[in-house]
Image 1 (cartoon, rainbow, N blue to C red):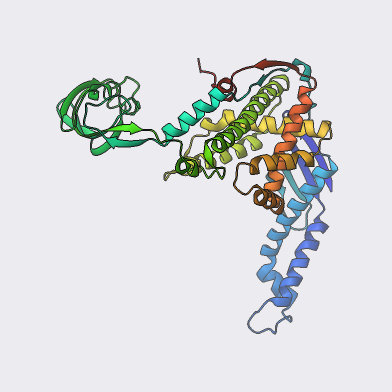
Image 2 (image 1 turned 90 degrees about the vertical axis):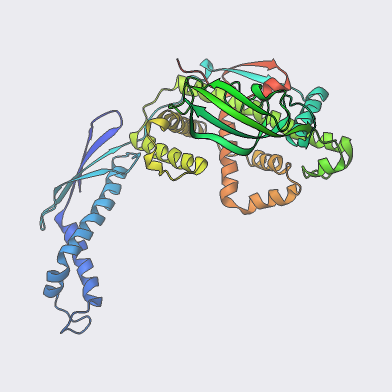
Length: 436
């Protein structure tokens, strides 16, 4: 077999391969002999059909299959011989497929980029530290109570945070518009669910009262047909209900599946959850800074095949998350290209760090991570056991631990500063940069 390789770009390779005709004919004859043993043809006993008849009937099909198999196997042999690492399936260009002659074809494909990860010293990381104070815990208990707010009918004028049951009809230029009317809808004043002015216009209203609100849709309203237009809403208030926060009772505690009894036991469990969230938030922010630093200090070219595959994965995830009747390939690729490129590049960089530093998952850390996750459940021992009986889930945890070890490796050489902050600041999500 003859092989020659041409570098057509930084990552694309054009490999010309010539396979001796004898190899093709051997494969063709092998298939024909297998066919002859089982072929059922009228006038002939099984296994006694003349080879000339087998060739006449099945020769073209046998050759096509043989050529396909030889192309596949010879391509694999050629990339091994040339020490190439394809990043996707090749595009095959046949040059000579004539029977009795050598098989010639060209395979065009991309290879994984070859690079060494460097620049750890130029990466800066701010590592936060925080504690869960009693005040933080009290605030969290208030949040949990508000999340379980009940509403009770009140015989008074509506205030912010009250829940109103309303009927309304919206008109633009005197005509009712689609989606602008509803009956028996529940609306919490101050929630910002309706357009500006709608909820404010109902403050002070009482059950049975009708109010007419003249409002203007925002210029950036999602329905472009209504954006910037003035509308008239006739609103009838059916009921006014005031919020009632639940008391910190055993019944309330039971909603969260907490076994400990009493307020102190509940506070202890909530604090544990907050501390767990705090650790994860700090770890995540450090990791994001490290990954951003690795991207900035190690610019590499991305194989188009890997980028395309990642875009397809993100399309599928988007459809699964948001539902609807849309198919993944109907979503524009441009929506996902930036995220896909980041994920592909980071995947390549992380894999190279693992290779350069010969990292392997620390099994002690793997168990600690599983135990940490399991501690959020009522029967943590069962959760731990489940992970160690499920290879796929266990390997996913190992991958996360290995990624943490990559972060630790970078932190040993990066410029790290420690900063004490409040619990709220530590767990607050990092805001995405605004586009210009």
